[in-house]
Amino acid sequence: MTQDYKDLTVWQKSMDLVVEVYRLIEKLPREETYDLSEQMRRAVVSIPSKIAAGHTCYPESDCVEILSVANGAKAAIETQLLICVRLNYLSESDVDKALNLCDEIGRMLNAMISKTASTTDG
Image (cartoon, rainbow, N blue to C red; front, side):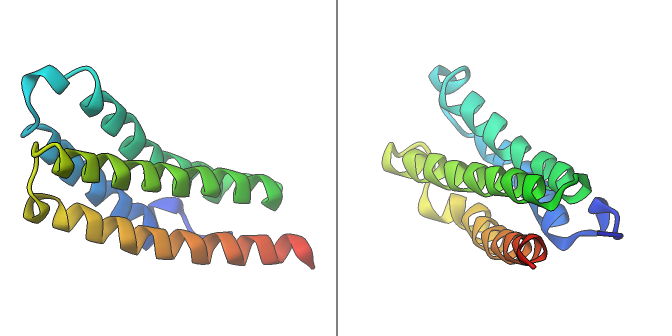
């Protein structure tokens, strides 16, 4: 892996997701300041952080594990956004952009994981 992680589209999109989720967190009720919103912050920040770590690690088997954690954090933030909708903290239109980014990031991470895993197999 020769490309700098900051040049990766998946990292850039995950940074966009961080900004979008932080924007949405501002809309949450005050009573969620230390519960749901804190979990959302941790999950969303973990995604670009793990992508950066997974892109620069060695051996490749460790990279796959780290990138899989990023994918798990992506699933967590999707779930948390859907919880916000179910609790009527946010509307479906509020979370559309973030969920679309999650979908894109998930597809890119799966491709990255598959590609990295194939280098460890053969």
